[in-house]
Structures are given as C-alpha cells and as structure tokens.
Length: 187
Image 1 (cartoon, helix red, strand yellow):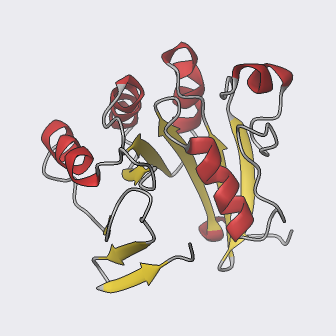
Image 2: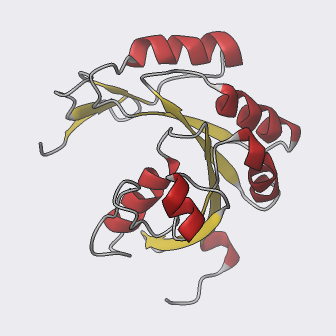
Image 3: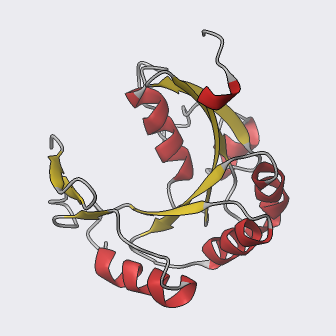
C-alpha cells in the first residue's frame, strides 16, 4: 500500500445493533475496493473481520476489527464493532479515534437498542453520523417505516440521500437524491 498524507486518510466506525449487517457491509466494502477477491459471509465463518473461534462459534462480533482499503486515492480505515450492548466499550473506544460513524439500521426491525446506544455515544463524543438503512432485499423490509422511525426519534436532521426504488426480494435499485440518478444493480 502506498503512503498517504493525513488529508487523504479517512477513519470510520460501523455501528448498529447486532445483526444489522456491519460485518457484511465491511466485507462488501473490501470486496468492491478489490482488497479481497471473494466476499465472505458470517454464516460461512469466512469474513475478514469476524475471524476468531469465539466469533465463529457465536455467529457475531465480540471485538472490534480494524480493516483498511484504498478508494479513489484515499485510504479508508474501517472499524467494525460488535452490536450487542455487552460490548459497548468496543464502540466507545472506536468512536474516540474516528472521523465519522455509519449507523446500520435493519430495515426489518427498525430502531433497536444498539441503534440508540450508538447514537447516544456518537452524540456524546461529537462524532458525525450517517444512518444506513440496510437489508432492503428481505421479504419483511420496510424502508419507509424505518426512515420515519429515524426521523421521529433523532430529529429533522435525518434526511434521505438515497432511497430504494423497491424493497423485498425485488430490490435492485436506489435513487441518489443529490445527483438525481438511479443506480440499478445486477440481480
């Protein structure tokens, strides 16, 4: 990896309740940046970040993982944190060293305790936070309900930058509000 000047390094933390998709998102980011050649899954126990025996046994993260990738001449350091409240110290420690946070919210379940705790800690530490409504391809996904929950709970600063064309098994496209462009993904 080449050497980067400080202005070309981004440090982010992935937050969210257990099962919201943090590890899967981290794996996808690594794959899309060509850092890895094959995208692993939590179920197959072959992700880059959940790599300990205890994580394989339990099927979820128990400690934070530091990952990195290169994207458009920038180095992005990613901290994938556990989602259960037993491990909130991992998220707090990560929030103290990052530029921003991405809060994953499961579109099937909406706001959960891990969402609340992560938001509260990010606010306490004055860390900018982006919500990412995730798992839109599931049968019970409800983007609109989840988005309304976020606006109601966290206020008027919650705005949609992208939204799905459809949700559920037919999900394959999003609209970028800023650019007014639709992106369609292969099935």
